[in-house]
Image 1 (tube, rainbow, N blue to C red):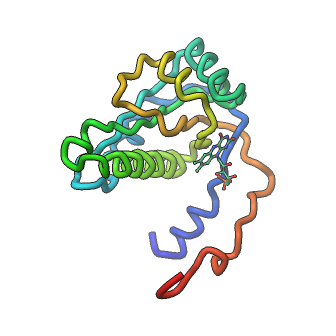
Image 2 (image 1 turned 45 degrees about the vertical axis):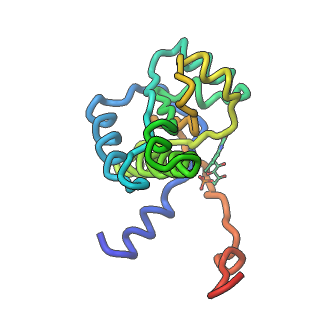
Amino acid sequence: MDSSDFYRFLKARSSVRSYSGEPLDPEDIDYILACASTAPSAGNREAWDVVIVTDEDIRIDLALAALEQEHIREAPAIFVVCANYVRSMSQYGERGILYALQDAAIACTYMMLAAHTRSLHSCWTGAFDESSVREILYLPEHIRPVALLAIGRGVPPLQPVGRMLVAEHTHREVW
Ligand SMILES: Cc1cc2nc3c(=O)[nH]c(=O)nc-3n(C[C@H](O)[C@H](O)[C@H](O)COP(=O)(O)O)c2cc1C
């Protein structure tokens, strides 16, 4: 893949919020996880974990926790990507909180892009009630749910959403 292929690949992904419910193949799940484990992390601590939810009853509970976002119920798999504070803070103290959140975010990004290479759709979902998600999944205290990544096969939007101009984000040398 050259750089223009890579750019086209990125441009071809959109968040999908309507799913067929067709289950993921176990190999798809293994592939997505293998890709995530190649992600960089602070001090190589890999301070992220994931709970893979395919059970419909749990997905219904998660959808309610996610402010009733229907795609969380519809998608056949929800990858609940979490920051593992203990893994990072044991080395970095308070700074480890920030690192664990970054580790989880990049692992989630790799999962999202890995799904895209297999023509699977996804939707990164950050709007959810954290304490409800903790309760539903029995998350220990030091594990913080960062994103519910819905993955499946669905209907992409007809038009991709637009972006700000790159120049609006960009500052050269100093702010
Ligand atoms: C941190 C984060 C939180 C998000 N939360 C939600 C969400 O709760 N519900 C949702 O439908 N999409 C959510 N999204 C997806 C964004 O809405 C989407 O990425 C953005 O509109 C750009 O669209 P695109 O992914 O199709 O390019 C989230 C994305 C990120 C990165």
